[in-house]
Length: 193
Image (cartoon, rainbow, N blue to C red; front, side, top):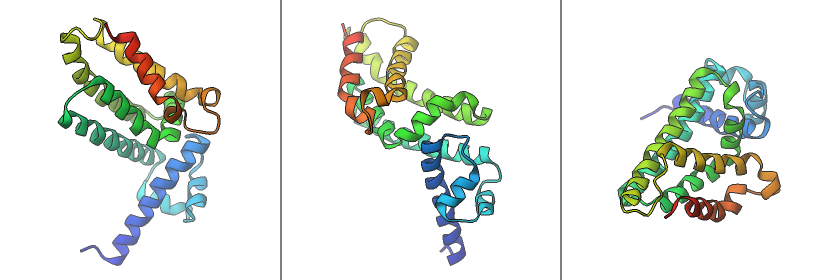
């Protein structure tokens, strides 16, 4: 059974992670760690006790995000594959992390290599589930024969365009929540026979 000190340490780490997500979502990944410490109401040094480098913190944040996506999409795999369900679940998990994912999409090119690689791994996980949902429908002739990578990149491009231009489509609210059904319906209209 963990002792009091271990529990406090775990709580502090959790607080850093949650606060870092909030700060990075609002201010971008160039926000200094002192801003995270201030928002979390902890000493600046506490961040580096748990995360020796900013890159370690960023990788941890992306790995948590990745685990959330994997668990959501894995549950879809167990309940039967369907492209419409997959698109809906993909947007739902992105809505839970919308601010963070928007910043990640916008600023990924400026992030350290290991963080970029983690982001690519996340997209790879999504693409595998995307392919698994598409294949049966393609074989059944329900989906146009378009190269898989073009289908996946078109979906991501559509989602990312709305996400990055959210103020145009949904000022002061979640663009993905507001436009979810339109995004799914439009994409399916493009790819269905």
